[in-house]
Structure formats: structure tokens, C-alpha cells
Amino acid sequence: MIIELPSMVAGRGMADALVDGLAGDLSGAVVRLDCRALVTGSPSFAAQLVSRVLGGGAAELRVEAAPAAFAEHLREAARRLGAQERLVVVQPATA
Image (cartoon, rainbow, N blue to C red; front, side, top):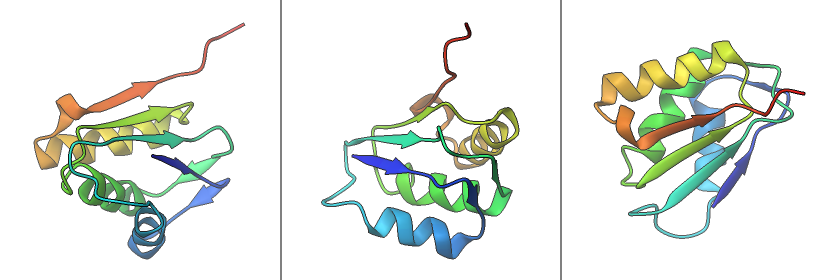
């Protein structure tokens, strides 16, 4: 399952809409968050996304190419949920 983020994300409603667009049950799934186009994301968006994905039973939320500040929002949300071990943040390779 893949969620591709646009350049800007904000608000809980937007997070809900993206998660609702995933096909099937999240229980035990690995959800990939493609952040290659992302420039900025709000803490409320990150918190809702983590809550819906990891709180919804996904085995892992794998975050790829997230800006540092947004990655930290995701980490904080996962810590608050007690699910930090299921959040994997992979930064792009440097040249």
C-alpha cells in the first residue's frame, strides 16, 4: 500500500482522505509513505496519519524521502501512540 504525498499537506481531514483512499484492511499491512514531492507538512497531518495507519493496525509505516521537520512530526506522533518501533523513516541516499 502506497500513499504519495503532494508538495504540501496539512490538517487531519487531508490525512483521513488519503488513508481512506487505501484499498483494503490495514491490519498487518506495510504502508509506504512516498514523500519525494513533499516540501512541508503540518504536525496535525502527521499525527492523524500515524494515528490512522499505525493505530489502525498496520504492521509498519515506512516513510521515504521525508523532509527532516516532517519526519520529526511523524516520530513524535508515533512516540505518543506508543508505536515508534513500527515507524521506519528512510532518507534518500546522498550523492
